[in-house]
Image (cartoon, rainbow, N blue to C red):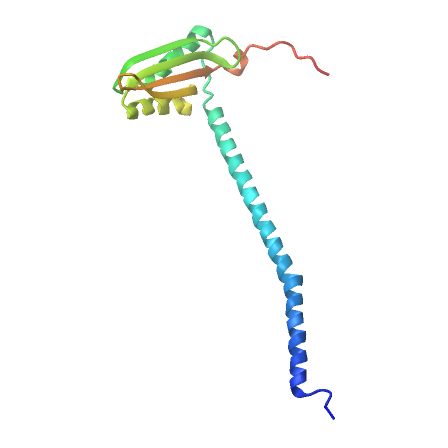
Length: 178
């Protein structure tokens, strides 16, 4: 006659029960916790991307707001101020074929629009563009092109404008609305 519960059989039953409990804990606790951890990592990465995008946008808006040194009232005064700003950015630099063209802004927030073209060393041309990009220059740089001319010299072509004071911005057509 066999004994119903031997010492070895009890050990095997306990081992099977413990193994089943370990599998249950793994499937019931560990797997959902890993899934939750991975979802939290993804949410954190998305939030970090949004934060960086908003930080870059805020920096752009701050630079844009700081760059809005207002042009003097009057078309001639605004054009003269822009011309002086463009000329001042070239001060002390060895540039050739310097051309500056300025005209009054036709409408909108641009008080005056201007172009600057120059030939020179890359460092000097980038210094000119950098000086004009500073908020204190009173100029908003619209477009910058660096190109090599036919004779191999490096050429800078820059388009910029100055901003009218809010009181000087002409009103647009009346808006229809509720």
